[in-house]
Structure formats: structure tokens, C-alpha cells
Image 1 (cartoon, one colour):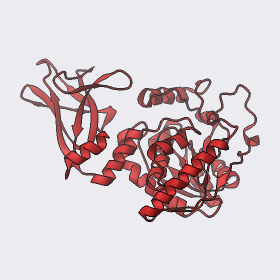
Image 2: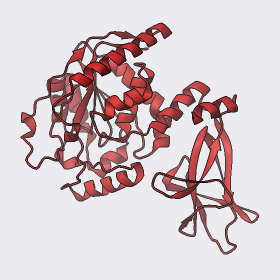
Image 3: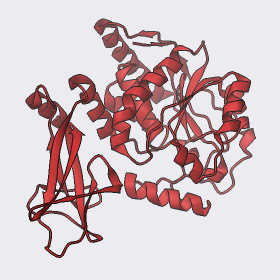
Image 4: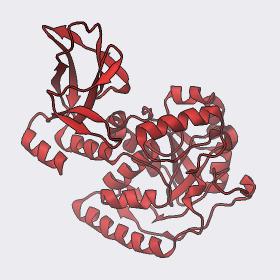
Length: 366
């Protein structure tokens, strides 16, 4: 349950990565005014949750008639022009693993979009001055950082000046570490991320807001923000997705939110699952990639007779995976096969929850 003191939408950026050939000076770009609808949402009972949903419908209608003249493309370029080698490597990995054509230019500094009067989604803070800017210009009261230490190391980002800058201006800085480009880890961390965001929201006074960021502000931060709007504010999932993505082009993984929602309903238990294949006798090494490990962290199979097998404890849901036999990626034709969004053929396994597996399967499928 949460109390949201005001709802509405708007947009604002600082040193935004705009595709425009001649962007104006960053500091000259004042946050755009937004029409803020004062709608107290006390979500502590079913009746109030229903009222909240009606309020959100009114907000959506009002937002449609008061859209900002500034495009959210100010925050994320789709052209991929310029940028450093680090940006190029990051963008290639992001597009391969998350889909889409959006790019991030770290050198151009922090960029963000105000999704609701109390919620801003953006890229990472890079300096103590960024914290001062957010406090002075956007009235940010809390910052929720979803980055891992490795994300910061990649761009040689030192967090200490950011923390000192936040402390200096009275911003509460909280971390909830989520792996980049990893929908499964996002699924597991969503409850703690949403809880941290809800707590930060409760600490806001009138006119203050919370800034949620990952590295680029295109995956993890939008995902946590959508889950917050869905779970806490009572918005329908697809409406929350529309409200955010219509203002900030990004690619949050809805399946991660759906599975996390089912985990909350049915519990987060795991089942022991075994996958395997009959590999050539001459095979020296067989690995499995995917499942809950991600495609970059394959696990080694053990030989079991004439088969190579791997056992994992997995939560409920569908998991895709692939075998790597002596360095060659392949799938097992004797196991269920599916095609992913990129046209790749992968094996998959459906894991059902403990307790009521039939109900769990029906709801997850729906």
C-alpha cells in the first residue's frame, strides 16, 4: 500500500542524448512544465485499489490531451551516431540481448524522463553535480540505483562522488543491484526493487520525487518503475507500460514482470530440473547456456552414461537453453524446441510451481 500525493506526467532532461544535429546547451534546457493532477491514492483496501484504477483512467485521458512538445527521444537516440568505443560495445550487447535499436551515449551525461510527478526514470548519475542538479531542478528526494559494480567499472564510473553529492544536497541514495541484460535476475529482484522504490516514495514531501536509474535507463529502471505502477499504484500492466514507453523509448521485459507477479501469488519456490543430450562419443566438453544462468554464463554438464546432463533448481516458468558441444552451439532435437524473437532455435523447459502446478501453469500461460 502506498500514498501517491500527486499524479500526472511530464518530461525533462539534463545533457540529454538528442538525435538533433544541433542540440541547445544542456544547462539551458529547463524541465518542461507538466499538468499535475492531484489524486490521492490510498491503496490499502480492495475498494481503494479499484478507485485507484479509475483515477488512473482519468489521468490517462488527461495526459493524452496535455502531451509534452518535447520528444522522449531526447533521452535515447535511435541513430547510434557518435559515441565512444565503450558506448559502441555496450550498445551492441544491449541490442543483441534486449532487442531494439536504441543506443546509449555515456559521454553525453545523464539523461532522464519524468514519467509521473513523483517518478523520474533515467540513466546513471555520473558526478556529484548531477545530484545537485536533480535536487535543485527536479526536486528529487531519493535515488534508486539498480547498477552492479561491474556496470560502473565498465565506464570507469566512481560512485563515491555521487554518494557525497547526494548527501550534500539531502538526497537519499539506495542501491538494489540487478544484472544488466538479464530478465531472469530482474524477475528475482523486482520485489525488493519495488519495495525500495515504494519506501523512497513514502519519504517524499509535496512536490518531491524519486529518480530510478540503471546504466542507460532503458531496461532495468523502466522495468522496476512499471512493476511499481502495476503492483503499488494499481495500474493495469499494459497501461503502465504504455504510460512509460510513450514518454521514454525503452525495452522493459514484460515477461519478467509477469513471472514476478506470479511468483508473488504462488510463492517463489524452485523445482529440481534435469536437461541433457546424447552427444558424440568423441565430445570432450558439453556446456548448457541459458536457463537461469544467462547466455554468457554456461554451466558444464556431467556425463551420465551416454548422455551429458545438467541439473538446476529453477523457479516456475519457461526457460530456454542451448548446448555448446566442444565450442559449437547447438540444440537437442529430442527435446522441446522453440524459436526466439531473433529467429534462433533453442530448447526449452516448462517448470511448474510447487503447491498447485495446474493453476500456476494456467495463470502463467495467460
